[in-house]
Amino acid sequence: MSPSELQAHALGLDLGGRAVLDGIELTARAGVPLAISGPSGSGKTVLLLALAGLIPPSRGTVLVDGTPISTDGDRGGIRFGVVLQTQGLVAEMTAQENVSLPLQERRLPTVEVRTRATEALRSVGLGDVHDRFTAELSGGQRQRVGVARALAGSPEIVIADEPTGELDPDNRARVLALLVDPSPDRIVVIASNDPEVVDACHRVLHLRDGIVDDGGDRIPG
Image 1 (cartoon, rainbow, N blue to C red):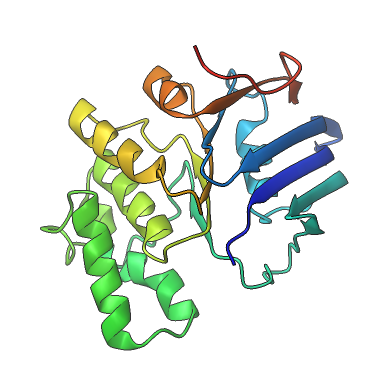
Image 2 (image 1 turned 60 degrees about the vertical axis):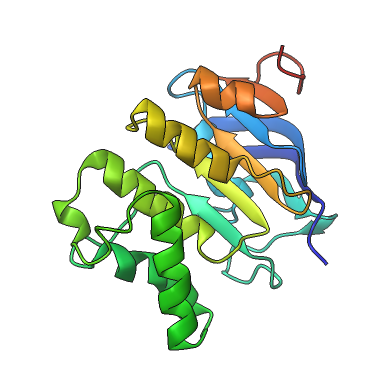
């Protein structure tokens, strides 16, 4: 059964001797995409990394359906798809090889890995560059490879950091439609200051200086 809630409770994180996050409370529910907005340096990226279990919080907890998630790579079988702002691609690998990496880690059959990676690249409009090294691609193309990699494994929880920043209007709309999935079984959290992304999400939380700026979530107008 797919998870229904991703929560942060009293979440705090210190870096370089200062609190980057302090007392964060949020709940992201399946089928209700959550946008996190805020100025540069407000803590959006660090919050997403903590929600994805990629960095441990200094205080508080991150929970999936009430169970704290581990930061040691064991997520209890829950499939996360993470879109990094820096993409995190391997330059010496092709687009298809990059998208295939998380599928190979799950020890899926080779044919299934190839099929899923190909379909994921086609979904973001990159079916014609599957055999090109990512170092040869434009910034917008690399960003879409990162989205394809996150979605190829049919994740139950999607965490995306500024996934549309380098995209033209057509590709922004394409990627946004894929991320803000109408599926009631997927939890989606997107950090973005792109008004189109924020408007497409069902809820929005504002951060400023590592704290919730406006007292909590609201329904976008």
